[in-house]
Amino acid sequence: QSALTQPPSASGSPGQSVTISCTGTSSDVGGYNSVSWYQQHPGKAPKLMIYEVSKRPSGVPDRFSGSKSGNTASLTVSGLQAEDEADYYCSSYAGSNNLGVFGGGTKLTVL
Amino acid sequence: EVQLVQSGAEVKKPGESLKISCKGSGYSFANDWIGWVRQMPGKGLEWMGIIYPSDSDTRYSPSFQGQVTISADKSISTAYLQWSSLKASDTAMYYCARPIRGLVSSIEFWGQGTLVTVSS
Image (cartoon, rainbow over all chains, first blue to last red; front, side, top):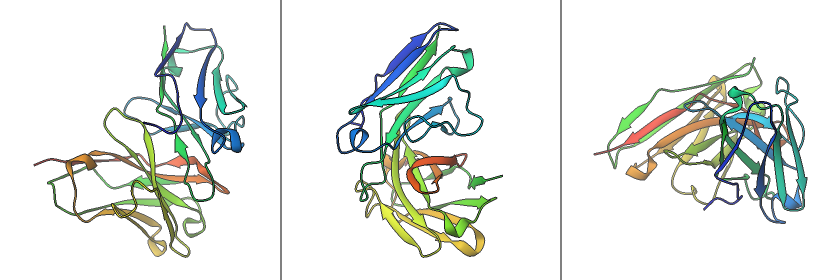
């Protein structure tokens, strides 16, 4: 069982918006502003899409946005495109004695 | 350009030892944390451990403490992940990972992955 809880699947049509949730506890998501989101296409290495809850690395489209409320973080993908179909993983810092925890992943399908 | 280039796929038998590598370039290898992430077939991501090559400070996730050894040779900008006795359950893709400087839990750069298959 993963430390952070994500829905196993999400879907949306091209052009629509979809939001993926990531629920943890006050010891991880709720306790720090250090939530990251990764995109992983089949057979590829993960790619960092969001860090520190809502910051985008250079080159990540602004269609991807992150937020957090309490112990739940969210990734929103706006203007869905076919290439957004992938697995998405959240992760969070969980204290100085912990390397960080991941969610179980959400498979995003673009209908 | 930061690059992490991992060694090739391995097929091993249970009980055998293995050491896989990850060569970093395009940044100051000794002065940034680098670690390993496991992804079992069809499953999610798991932090295994991380090392600071400059002084070899190494930290392991509890699940992997005592199961693997992480090391680094800063003279050749290479990190290693080692098993002394492989098990079938070690079959997985292993990624080396360099976090954002100052944010150990956020991985900015990933290697291409090394597939380890353990089967009799």
